[in-house]
Length: 150
Image 1 (cartoon, rainbow, N blue to C red):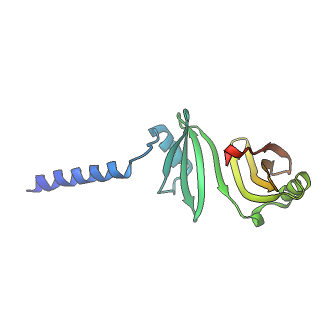
Image 2 (cartoon, one colour):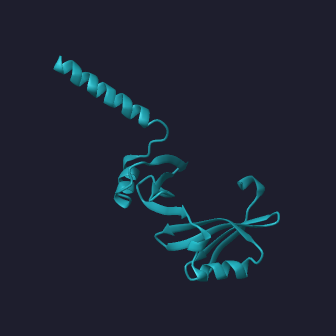
Image 3 (spheres, rainbow, N blue to C red):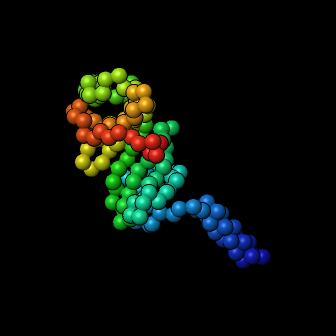
């Protein structure tokens, strides 16, 4: 009877694991790298970003994050949204000077091994742009957002 209970328990555990794991399952190297970088995160949703990259979605202190890893476990980027009040003054000044009359639709912090940038989706009338500004206030990327990117 004990053996039957053990077998039943193992079967149920495996069934639950299979149910929880449905969807995209990142390679072991990727999940190991994630756990090393974010050891306190318990709930992660994985999605295949492209042919060689995986994206993890998770929360830290009720803030939604995403982190991207290459198939070999190399960390590429971590992003999370921020409020306008969290934008440093040097970055705000660069955004206002470079894009007068534009309104911020979304603001994020993007961290890579190259450093941290603030990424913005901004708009003025029908014109929408994506802009990235480094911590020193230098505009490092600006591109017009096309209708099919929304």
